[in-house]
Length: 333
Image (cartoon, rainbow, N blue to C red; front, side):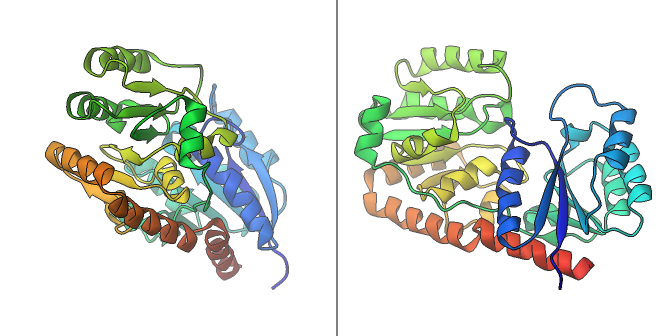
């Protein structure tokens, strides 16, 4: 087959999980000998019907495949205007959509009716749709950390460190993490590694800091938003990564932790259970406490899950994920 050209419609180079995803997928596809073009979708700001029509008809170059990175908050109900005009404009050119979220029936129908293939990241997401989907896992960067002693010295930390990583939002269980560390682990530092999409913090983050001062005074360290070059130090300093999310469809922050080969303790929601062997799970508050005790006291057990994380990262590295995309593109062409 001749070289494939792909236009990826996505937010790019901003504080956004889908941006981070696309910034990894695009070069991985290029390494598979695809010509990749990025069509920027605004992450924030006003998005009128005219904006989506213009995006669909004037911004996308002539390519073999148009690949849309979809999430409901990015389109805010604009799927009808965008997909209908895109289909008219492209004619028979295949449209692929990656659904990074689920559970909004009307936009789902629009997306599926106008896409030649729809990708989801796991079986949990596939089961949520009544239409056929292709499961291609979220890619992982196998990465190295700064040695633990050096990393803790750089961050001014001492003793055991449990880290919660990623965007800080209400559904991610930060209160539970703070309460557990403050009430059950007085000698442990909780490293809250992350911030928000814009600005330094939100009213929710301010409220969390007040809770931390009351329940776990002096035990919680807040990093704020971090540049990528800081991550090897953050993960290097972490004895255990804690993932308390109450729900989710896939998690770039969780997969980043796995990519750095860290020991992860995660709530047993569906997307987590599909990664059995790459992490340790908990269901109840008692499970969380017991799991942390076991991992912090048993280096051999931590090493077991670190090895599982590395194996998962290698099996789902971006080059392998890009190859799966190229196979799908070839089938459509």
